[in-house]
Amino acid sequence: MPRVELLCGMIHRALPLALVMVHGIALPAESQAQEPFAWGPDLEFHTFSIVALDPRTGESGVAVTTRRPCVGNAVPWVRTGVGAVATQGGTRLEYGNDLLDLLEQGLSPQEAMDRVVAADEGRERRQVGVIDMRGRTAQWTVSRP
Image 1: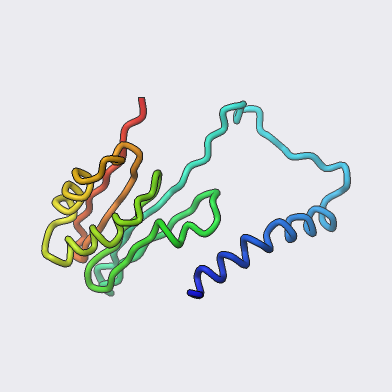
Image 2 (image 1 turned 120 degrees about the vertical axis):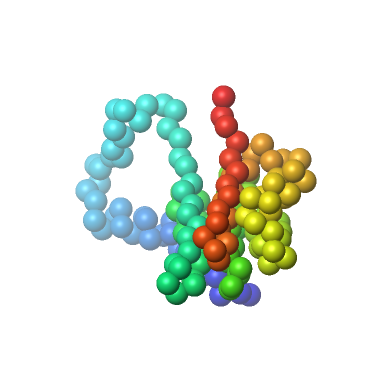
């Protein structure tokens, strides 16, 4: 089993126990969750991803934060000497390799993005960003009504 999947699985299984332990030790028995009034009943959670390039070192990378555990198996895609991709919001795993393959073939990030999005019938649910080793970028996100 790949190391990342093993680690994510361990965290996923251990987290509920860890939270119970912290609650039992660190919090008084009568503690209650705090919910700021401004959150209201329609609280939404979001995922934030960033693709980046360090022009000095030639390194590219992806960072992601979300409320869902183990997104590292789906959101970030990086290929040495080619670029980086973050795909989220109705994640389509194929976007990672497809975009990096097209960049490797010499397409610009925008040309690559236009091609993969046009071929995807589920594109209205997707969010994706890409950067190449020249610092050129493209992104796709659907507008909400």
